[in-house]
Image 1: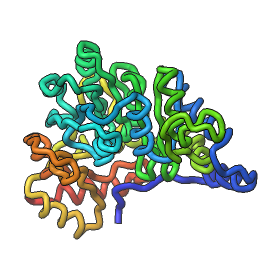
Image 2: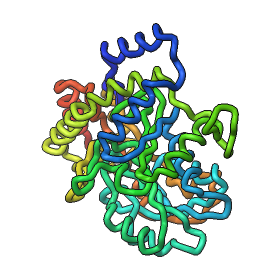
Image 3: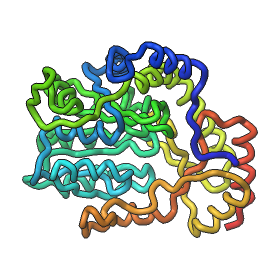
Image 4: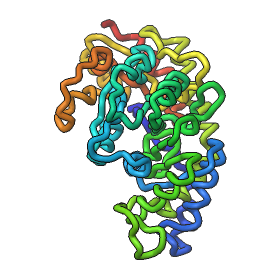
Length: 352
C-alpha cells in the first residue's frame, strides 16, 4: 500500500525528543521560544506564537484580533472544518464565498459582494499548498478596513510574489499536524508584525495570563510543549528539502498522468501539501485505486456551508462541484521513485 501521507521522522527528531525527556522540562519552555524565533525569522515577521494545534492557533488569532459575537468573517466555502468553526467559537458568523475552480482558493471577486457593516475580517486559505491571490484580497481589505488572517495550515514555505505566506496579511496561522509539510505531531503557530496582537495571543494561549495567576482575559490551555517544539526545530531545518521533494514529485506527475494536473497560478510557489486532480464518476476511480493499493484523500467531501453546525443557506456551485470531483494522490517526501512510478502506472490504467 502506498499511503496518502507519511511523516518523515528520523533519528534527529528522536534524539531531540529524547533530550527533552531526559531534561525533565516537558512543558512549554525555552525550546518553544527558540522554535518561535526561528519560525518568525523564516517568514520575516516580528512575532511567532506557538500553540498546541492549528485549530488553537486560528482560534487564538481570531480572539487576539478582537473578533466577537455579532461580527462577520468572510472565508472560503471549501476548506477543513476548523477554518470556519473557529469563527463560530468566537460567537461570530462565518460568511462563505465560492472558490476559483482552478486553484480551489477563495475567489476575490466574490468577497467584496459579501462585505457588510458587520464584516471584520477575511480568512483566505492557501489550500493544498497554493497561495491565494493575496494582492486582490489585501486591496479589498484595505479599502474596507478589514483584517486579513491567512490560514496557511497547508502551506509552509509557499510563496506569493516572493513573500512567504503567513507574512502578508495581518496574521498568519500554521498547523504542524502529522500530515503537514513539517510536523510536531500536533501543534500550531501564529505569525504577525502587530505587537499588540502578539501580546494578546501569548496571554490567550496561557489561560489569559501575562503574570502567573493574574488572569487578564479569557484564555485557554493552548500551550505547545517542549517535546513538540524539539521535533519542530529539527523539522524546520528540513522544510526546504521536504518541499523540494514534494514539488519534484508533483512535476513527475504533471509530465506523465493522463488525467490532467493541478493548475498553478503565476507568481506563486505551490508546495503541494496535496496533489489534487479532478475525476468525474469518482467512486469508480477510488475503487480502482483501492484495488491496486494506492492511497488517496478526498479533501473535502462537503462544502462548509452544508455542514449542519453552520445553519447556512449559502450555495457555492464551484465548491459543490469540487467536493464531488477532487481526489488527492500521494505526493509526500517519503515516496520513493518506484512509488511514484507505480502511482502513475495505476492512474493511467484507469478507464473512466
